Length: 266
Image (cartoon, rainbow, N blue to C red; front, side, top):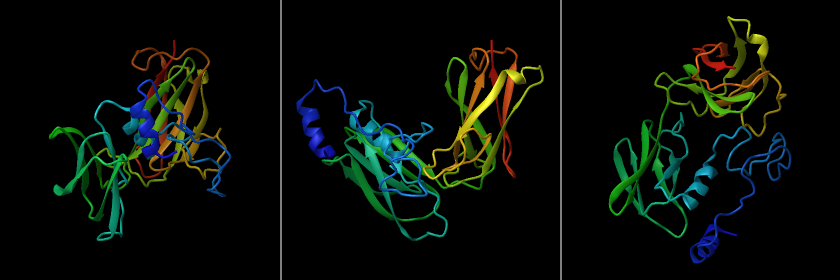
């Protein structure tokens, strides 16, 4: 069923609370129509790590009441200067306007679908979409041409009872995620207080549908500038802000400033 067809039922039946889309997450196997070397399906709104794909924001535009806009693709296309690039906007607002390096490429009004598109000549810099409701700015999204990989940034994705999911990003010197970077990242646990044996690396992932690495490795290549590592503890993991004895997770990649994050336990 297309969105245009579904939207008719959605608007005419206010008792409908949502829609089940196959699938929320990518999953191993069933790679049709994307065959080898793919080993993971690509149907999901999120990849195998839970990193949001563009489809995530499409569904968000269908159901979110808060004004939003999401633009794609990224804005790193070396060697394609002057080539026409299609920019899409997923939005739930009345109008959207595209700016390339501050120059407007026109407004587009709400259509039957939830996607607006422009074809523009690529030039490095900044691409920004402004969304409007009732003539006023309601939401914005932008992508920037990033610099060379510079460092690794680690952040908490999820904290369970005895495990934490850590997100690793390859960033440039300005702190932007490098969307085409595939640097190899090596993770290790460091402790100064004999707590190292209480934590272990369960595995790593990157969301790449064609990744053939074993999931229990402590190193992995970034995919789209991102990777993930899962750390387990032999006792409940406390809030990361609590200053109690724990360990440091370090992420190292050749030529990059290493990243680190504290992981604590009760």
